[in-house]
Image (cartoon, rainbow over all chains, first blue to last red):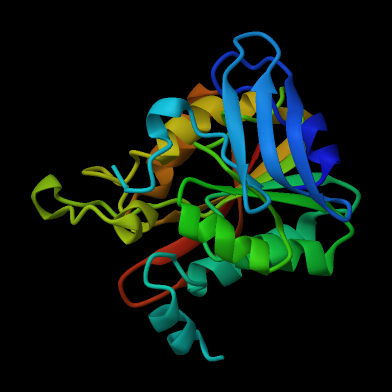
Amino acid sequence: MKESLLEILCCPLDKHDLELEDAEYDGEEVVGGDLVCTECGEAYPIEDGIPNLLPPDMREETPA
Amino acid sequence: MTLEERRDDQPDVYQPAEDSQLLAEAACERLAGSETVLEVGTGSGYIAARIADETAARVVASDLNPHAVRQARTEGVETVRADLVSPFRDGAFDAVAFNPPYLPTDPENEWDDWMEHALSGGEDGRAVIDPFLESVGRVLAPDGVVYLLVSSLTGVDGVVEEAGDHGFSAVAVADESFPFETLTVLELLR
């Protein structure tokens, strides 16, 4: 993801802003780290450049 | 690679089909090009990549399926793993495109893998469409527009009525008939 994506993302639970923490970069691309909600503190991992913004109870790899 | 080969190669991800092409064409024709666009349920990333290639819009794609967001990213699309529009800010998008899972499926016959999630709309075909219509208004800019693919198998009139309940007026902007269904692209405006 690009850092500019933060302008359109929010916490899926309470819709507050997210902050990028422990970012790993590959050029301009953020390839790892966490997006952390400034309100509830929930952390959403960035996996291989893709932020996983599913609510924590939906995060598992298996369907349903 | 042919479409058939891609299908075999990516059994966990819905690959582009007639519905994808119809929605991609309708959206590309109607977007002015300077918009910020979200494609929900992007699957292979085909529709999002076409909008990015054929217009000047900034395109973001989301999917629930981890295999889909990985494939879409290889198409060069900026992707987010998400449940419908839940992690996007209020008013963030000028347009949202969605080719939803729409096949009415008997609960006895659900097969519970990623492809089922990509295809099945539950018993009435609207298990994903209705929550989408309820939530999409929040992320649309004031003059924002939704391009939603609907099949006659799901029932276009019912979807138009549901959209109306959430403040949208619907116009059919493209359709195509096949032996077992007619596909329609609805443009939803508030």
